[in-house]
Length: 56
Image 1 (tube, rainbow, N blue to C red):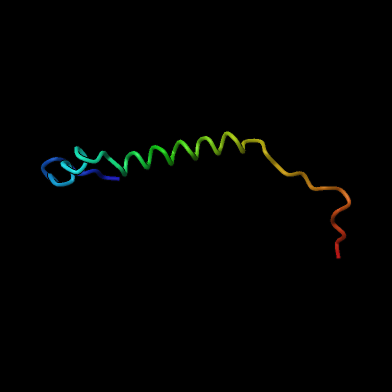
Image 2 (cartoon, helix red, strand yellow):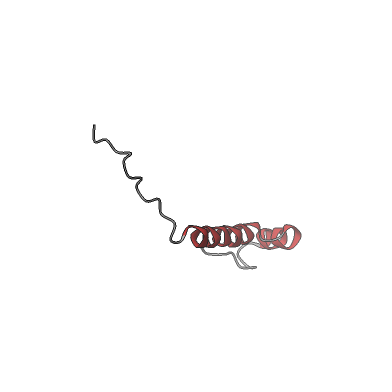
């Protein structure tokens, strides 16, 4: 994702200075959540339960 430079979007720069870089913060948190979910689910599988499937 391309970010605006000071010369391209001075309003954007002032908003970031005032409120923080919300898109970047959101992206960072989302990546962290995905990484944690991947670690939690790594190797987790549900084996088939014997005798449950009747084939009908």
